[in-house]
Length: 208
Image 1 (cartoon, one colour):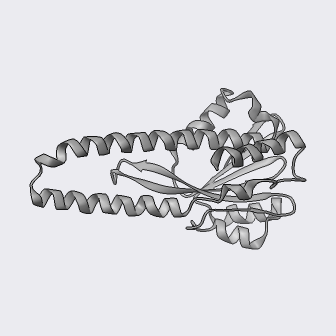
Image 2: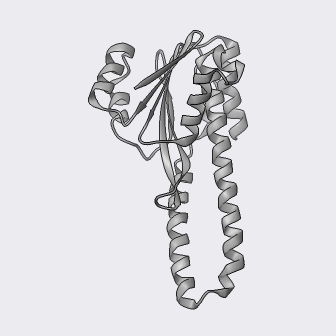
Image 3: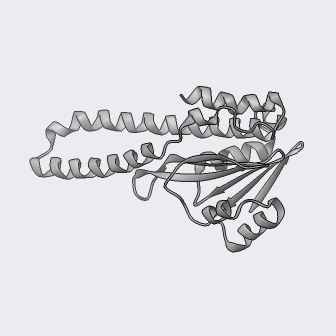
């Protein structure tokens, strides 16, 4: 568990949450038992829910795995209060690590320090930008395969089709997990001032 303070807001990052981490969140933030239970293990479904004093959001991002030589769907759980943004993840997520380093060095967007809503907005912008670069990399890889496929033997083509089918199944499962961004509209009212609420609405408008 690591923490960064930016002006009056805080970012708490938890990797592979353990029982002591869950107990800490329970004692300090009084999150709902169902939410705490869901933090214990990864979930397959993206969601966004509003509780009395916080938002709970689950998102998945395509992250390339050098070991498996394919993109994997990596989950991040977000708990957003007026003064804390808590991220819970289940492994290393490079763009989040890079964003953390920017915040640590003070090289972040100046709007980040306005509220936890603006911090969330800038964080998701970084993650989405990374995802687009991943998609661009995959597109280039497909172009290369299309040029080389004619030179393959029938047996090699079959192996390639099996490999691509496996990757498409992984990609398809990620797409099905996509959140309904239209549900973001109006969420967070009462948690932030109107100017901070606008960041949540902008997330919704940019994704639908």
